[in-house]
Image 1: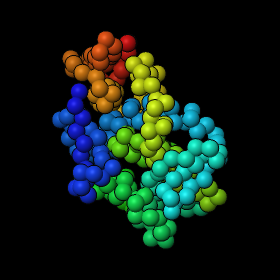
Image 2: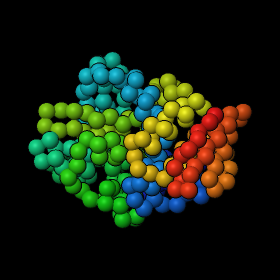
Image 3: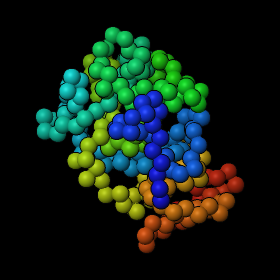
Image 4: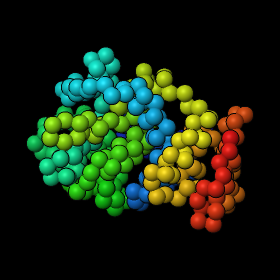
Length: 243
């Protein structure tokens, strides 16, 4: 299963922040499509990341571009934006003129902005809007999946919350990428978000490297000797998931 890497903005092939997508995927046009495409793989990896950092205290050094947990683990970060508790508004990092965030930490946020403008997706292209922590989980999940991050983190501070993505080989080495994880992750995903179940599972399987056979109301995904068999009703809601 081949993956295509598509970079928006900077065309330098050495640029580290690229949008991943399965071969033949088109541009997403709204939040629902973004969750369907990236939610499964991101949620699976997020479970691993959450277990690793647990409820440890955090500290970010934006000059060094790193976030540390309990003074023990330190990882590179990208800043997506902040939620203000007083105004209950989300502000994308690229729209925050007062923050003086180093440009190197804004690369993913700027690529998301361009992606949103290309597809008229307000979630990504509007600099500021009313939001709550649930919206931050959506933004973090989408960004984490799109950029193949190790996970996202909502850094709670006195006046608000900063949403960042984290990428580290040390974290990725602890992720099992197991077949059985699909059977627990996917039901969790569809319980959290109103999405097309079939589209979401199709994308999830492809991004995990499965070959997928689409039989209208059935998906069969195979990777090596492992097989996922899913069935859907007329509205493409999941009725059976076996593997």
